[in-house]
Image (cartoon, rainbow, N blue to C red; front, side, top):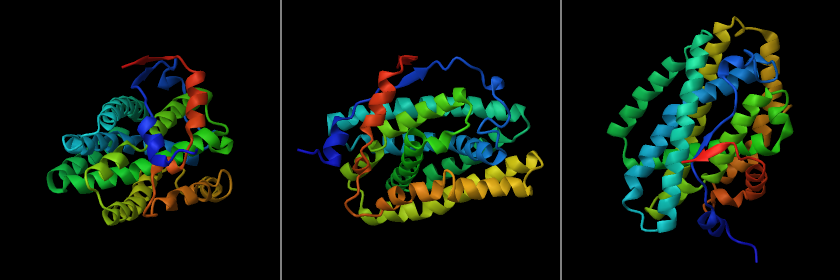
Length: 280
């Protein structure tokens, strides 16, 4: 009998992993994503935004942890916190590397940090958890593209592709933890979808602003070829918006659960082929 999404979620186990990728960021080419400024700075912008976002996710879950009685979910939360903390460290190291190339990456992190401090002070914990669920869904559907769509990573420097694949694997492993915590502590449908609506335009706006700053630093912000590449990236090849649309809109279903998108097979493939990490 086919298992339900919530049954799958209850069975998923995952560790925190400290990876050994065997390269330094300084060894990467400036345009490490298909030698393309638009695609490279799209990913660079996401990396800058992820650090403080992941810290907010950790805080949002911790603020509800005392309300959760399910020991299985408690263990998943502990592993989720480990994974997100390690991700944050790697994103910050990469931001320092971007600084060395002349991009204001750590300044972006500092701006995001101030906002997250404000949110923790003034925004109710339940709403912050709803926002976390929405962003985690965004990262999960982007991760699915990294894992399953060859066009999404075509031309990417293979060393950095390996790092982004690891990140995608772990985002997939823990994609339902915040969602399950939200439901287990009484989170309601309306707040969940309202948070997604707001997160959608804010997420895209922020990523675009940071990406444009980086392109401006390179003197390529007004380059027609860059924006031609951007149009292709979003709508043609890999057609990111087209590719994620169905998975994105599923979130608005009342009965949605992240493991409705069952990609455990991809997790198994990666786990079988990797031992370059230390469990923490």
